[in-house]
Image (spheres, rainbow, N blue to C red):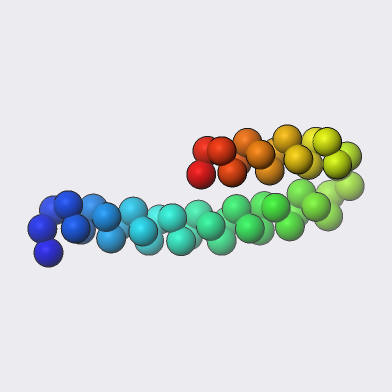
Length: 50
C-alpha cells in the first residue's frame, strides 16, 4: 500500500467515525426542542461541512 492509499484508507475511517457522531448530533438536535427553523439551520451547516 503506497502513501496515497494509506491516506485514503485513513480518511475513510475518519469519515465513518464522523458519520456516527453526526447522526447522534442530529438525533440530539431533534429531541432538544429547538424550533424547526433552527434545527434545519444546524443540519444544513453540518451537512455542508461534511
